[in-house]
Amino acid sequence: MSFVEQWQTQVNDSLMACARLVSAVSDIDLKYQLLVIGVLWPVRQPIQDFDFEAMQAVNEILGNRSKLVLQLVQQWEDDPLAVAQGLDAKTLQSGELGAALSDLIARFNAVSVFAKQLAGQSRVSQSVPSADEIPTQPSLGLPRVLVSYMRSDGEALATEVRQKLQEAGVVLWADLGQHEGTREWWQQITLALDRVDFLVLVMTPAAVKSKMVLKQWRYARQQGVCIYPVIKEVVDFSLLPRWISQVHFYNLNLEWSKLVSSLQGPCETPRIPFMVEDLPADFVNRPVELDQICLFVLPSPYGSRQKSKKQGQKKA
Image 1 (cartoon, helix red, strand yellow):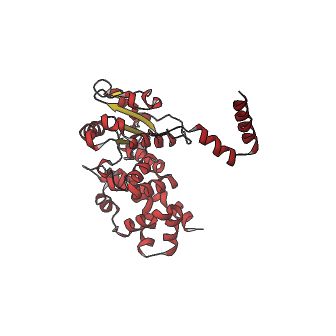
Image 2 (cartoon, rainbow, N blue to C red):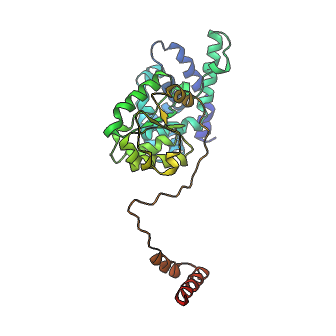
């Protein structure tokens, strides 16, 4: 039996044990931290003992990101609840580490096992819950929504949106606006969009003109992420590509409850993996030069058609 297979046989019991610890938490919700610990606890001691097979198993699943997880586990002590209380949820859910942990959670189907255990505890301590009361992935603290904005004129509105969504129980990805303009910013955005269900774009005058906003929009569509642009003042839709200006923009002054309701439901949108980029604003069409290039590089049928076309033009 490989170490990964051995890990698989142990992880369910580990997750169930960590889920039972939730009842010991009084004033702080540590569900997501305990979920992470449940996945990694079977390999904690082997990693701390520098067991080659254990470290190789982590590397087999995570590749280049394994180093971050190994460093995390090496710091853990023997009490899983104490370890959970010492972890920061935002750190676990963002950046390369967040992406690696999300992959491990998916690899071991950890959300399902953890949720079933929590549901069982709920039935014991209370009455049998309805389907709406059984914990789901969002209730475990897994982020479903990325709020994106331009810092130049959208930070205040984005802060307001984030606070109200959190008060409504919507689980958000970490705020990436503080990294705007850095080399790692786009990498962090793509990591988030690979994992969330919704992208809330705070559309301000700067955002309407931003190429980065268009880039985020395209990538979100490629990943099958539902996109909800929000506004609180009139924006110039003429500056947007037609395919964007035709999308419904949520007016936060009138449609706040509708936005929250949409974010609490499922995202149902198809992935569009192949999208042609818009032509740049300074593009100059040069059909004569393009035809000349095509004559040299494309197969003869195209070249023959172009030659015939030019000969016909000369005769005319």
